[in-house]
Image 1 (cartoon, rainbow, N blue to C red):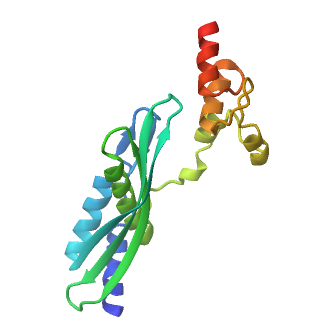
Image 2: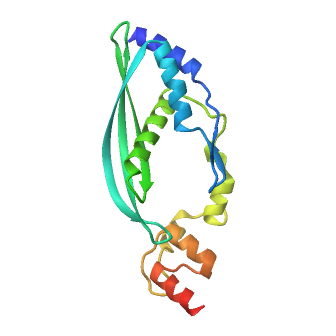
Image 3: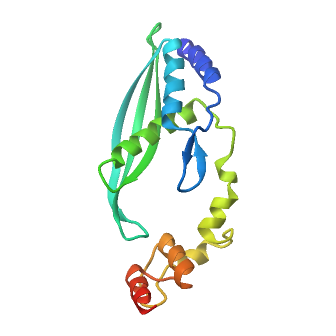
Length: 194
């Protein structure tokens, strides 16, 4: 494994940072695109004479209902990437997992893209020059304030009108709109009464 390890150190050096060129206009954040990651990694692998073979596998799939009441497909994919040193024949396997959600037929492709992108980013320790966990704005907008008691939040995941179980997302939307946690049917009733 010495030959492929030496080459991978060169790949890691060449791909150490990938800038965030993508922008999510809806949620207002920048991200490293899959195209940017794969372009940079592939160029370095080819330069260092390392071939890659990617094998994706669907781990799970189900339909989910969004906070707007729409049904979307949620798929989780695991990829195995076999890196082959073309000079020595040595091989190394990387793996990654990703999820994708879509109302049409793109959930699998989104999951594969995420799995491949993050397998390379994590295995080659590629930085985007920031820390996504340091984004308190996202936490504050999702929870209204920083959560202090996770157990209390889970115990309050019931509709105040009918007692049905609800998700955190449905709770957050209904609290913002109606001032109390309501399931989707009770939200519709409250909307009709307003």
